[in-house]
Length: 152
Ligand code: FES
Ligand code: FES
Image (cartoon, rainbow, N blue to C red):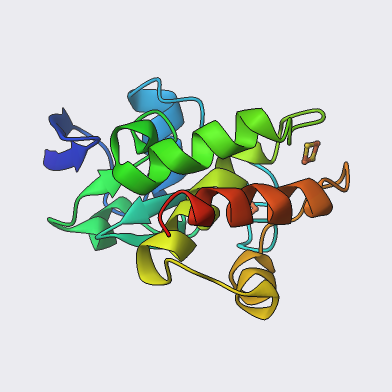
């Protein structure tokens, strides 16, 4: 039995230690906002925060999470930057199909957590691992800048 802290709540899960975090979130805890895409850390759709850093949950085993706190798209709106990012996302009407957007929001929030006023190159570097097949990149950049402006 492993105990995880997810979005501020403690969860006991009876799963193998080599199970990817994404599987535990979706299949055992019904936190299905985090999506499955490539499964090989190439698309970013499964991004969550572990210990305050963005990680690809399809490639992180539950045993390697350890005691670090996990935050998912279901909980990010309760954080100061997560709330700003989600508001900016709505104001800029960023999503198209929506499939990639949880991962985009998690990466954007992690960027603002580490760099409150990112320039274009900072945004490009931080978001490079998050693929959007609908091509919402221009709106994503605008929303990140608008969220950062709320902190200025
Ligand atoms: S599903 Fe994890 S990076 Fe694509
Ligand atoms: S909004 Fe459709 S994949 Fe990004």
